[in-house]
Image 1: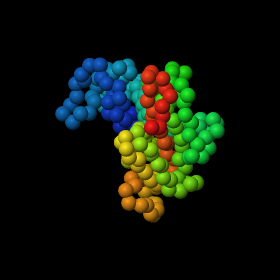
Image 2: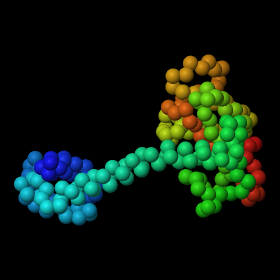
Image 3: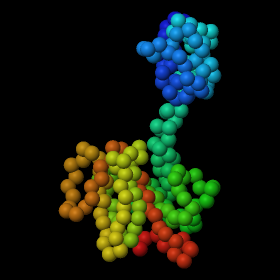
Image 4: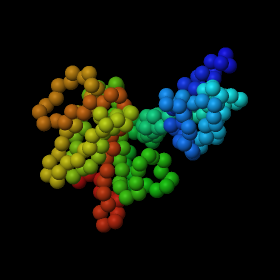
Length: 214
């Protein structure tokens, strides 16, 4: 078992060192294998003999791999968790249907727990549930800026809702496999998730956040 753990440590070493950049260049053979040497990294020094980790090097390398994997999980799940938190926050506030929109009366500050929000924009947020409601149409009035974002915050769904001064626009949100029929001139946005965030942005008038739509 100890030998297998040592081999596993050698296998993951390349990825581990990539995430923890070496502090000093190491001497390696032409094939890139470690020999009998000390590998110096920002995460400490690891002793190798004949290409195998010795002492507690194998255990420490495995612990380091677990840490790197935990960091990767955190980073890849950050946006989905944020979207779920936003959805549950809107529901707790009373906005449980797509037609119910939460509008901020004041500009945000450091106390607002919301990713990527700024302190110069008036916000309004809603949550679309394509599983319960099916394909949903968003009617964007003139002079409005906003966005649609799927539950994974991917570019496949992300859409900018920007309308001109004189013209409104309609956006159909649906799943990739949806067979919904839509009228000519509507913008179709297909979401890989049932959950979709609708965000609207307003602007200050005479230094006061009193204007959201038109």
